[in-house]
Image (cartoon, rainbow over all chains, first blue to last red; front, side):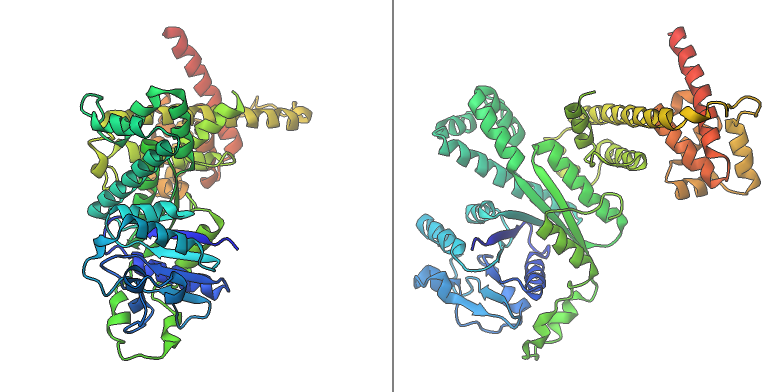
Length: 307
Length: 182
């Protein structure tokens, strides 16, 4: 069975990637789907906390340091059908992952036996993060309607696209073309990703076709979190449109999640709970999320005229 | 217009090819807002996606909007020609034409403000005012105008079909005249 991989990233920290990953996971599992969550937030892992798992015995640290296969470090959660690979919570040097380790990590992810594999990428635009993002069948980005978050979001997407285009050219023995174009960017009047692509496309028909095809297939799903009013939703539509028109990629505005004032009360105040019954819920599991998950599963998006 | 071109126009407005006229309108209003004003979505890429480039896109969007409008109007006309074939005799002669000022009067009698109607009909206040004052040069393309007048007069319980037909007739005359003058 081929599993569907969803990666959840977006650049900025604190936008709700982890709770959204958890919520999506619980939701799909409740629908009877077999789901695996992977906490790839290197250096800031906390999916297990949202699932109320204290002091997990196995984690990605075992994979990277003790070379345990991923299959052996998957743990059960309180939710039937939902399993978790706890993030690298025991190392203090998270960027030390070697290239070969990364490739092994990806190979192991693909071989996990689940219908859905949801990867929480955490914040930042580290190459490891970008590569995990590009691995996914569904590339989900989370942002909040704040300028700093949106700025990081654009950066994240541009970096991912840059990486992807370079890789496509490399696969067609055109690595040097891309490298030289970027190296001599001042002479070539390359200022940003758009002018970079423009320059490359001009260089030959083959490259033009490759890039055009890649742009057409490069699809992003946007989730807008912490929405407070209808104007915030409009921001989601704006981001979507600007990305389409500026980068020429395909973008879905999959849905939004309303701001919840008492969100942290839900977790902060209940440290004493040990029963996994509580796990079956997150504060985000509500009416809006149903629409959001359905849109993601069915590859649809928010209704433009009735968001 | 080829189907491929038409599809591109709809893509530019980021809507489905089956969108209704009022949906086309709303999509256009939204696009205009995105590409003509600064927001927290545009500011972070202001330096690379410049105002000038955004203006270019806005122009393309306007063209797409007008082309889609013409297309929808033509489709409607074709339908109408077929369905009205049997009732040619029901002409408009004899009845008094509904003018912009008539619409205004009816609205005022009902005690409704332009702002209120703008909220109900989702047509901008400015357009409603231009309709009443018959400011032809400021009005949107014919297809949209027709849609606006129909929607607007419906709320005032005016015979909206007649109001729209009368209005468009005057609008066309003005357009012809103004073309000659140019």
